[in-house]
Length: 333
Ligand code: MLT
Image 1 (cartoon, rainbow, N blue to C red):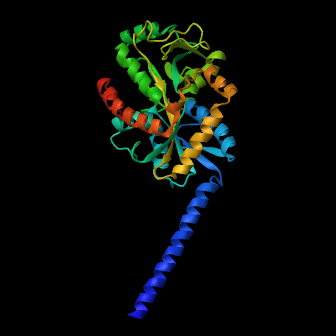
Image 2: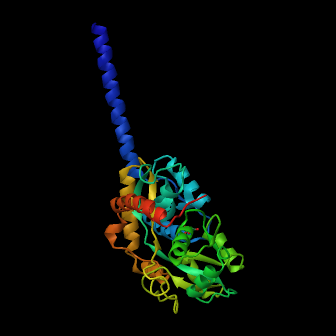
């Protein structure tokens, strides 16, 4: 009996020592983070709007936390492949997902089988600024305005091809909403990201495309494509003579992509707080935020960048998109 008790006591003492060591190592881990390179998964081809915005923010946040942040372009299926990969990653504070309105908002309404749940499988880290989109046509296009394009599509159902970044991407969703609002019937041509879709638009292989302002602007300014409508409610100075579609052509039509950084569920809270703080610090650089504004990117009030605000927004958007997708009859075959 005596022997059993002392064994038990010694096991308890050992357990307490192990627990103390573990607690110390977890604390030390959180304090030391980050000790190595971070990876942000961008689920589209390199060179598109999500990739461009993620690389810019990763560079600034990386400088704040003193580590390199590498971008992993795991493209395909409108971003859902990369999102699924991120959901299964170790929640150790080193792998993250750059999410957006498509696969983190509309995805559950559109895909019958999704390998992740945008709300349950992720912890929100911080929201990026929003980006409106531009309706683009090749420079050889006979359609000189959005009204021209709509009039042609009305007379020729199924004759206008819209390039997009994949089923359920924002370029696809916004084109589907545009089609629904205009009462036209177009053909969706999916790519692994907006960058390859843009290449085909420039080459005149597709008739039109919605792209975010940050990557559309250099192409428009370089004369490689023509902008014929904006999805913002207000005109954007960098796109002179391009009217918001909602002003006259399609009253009330408005859209913008929202983005955010997400961590696999269970990522240490301290890591999320440190990343959010580093991001806010980076955003205090007015020269940087001015550069974003110059690309038509829409900065948000600081409270909306917070992890809790992004978590709330994501859950709300999943619900909103179930209704929008059903009303506009957006589906993925
Ligand atoms: C989209 O259209 O959803 C994206 O912005 C695609 C991309 O970044 O390539």
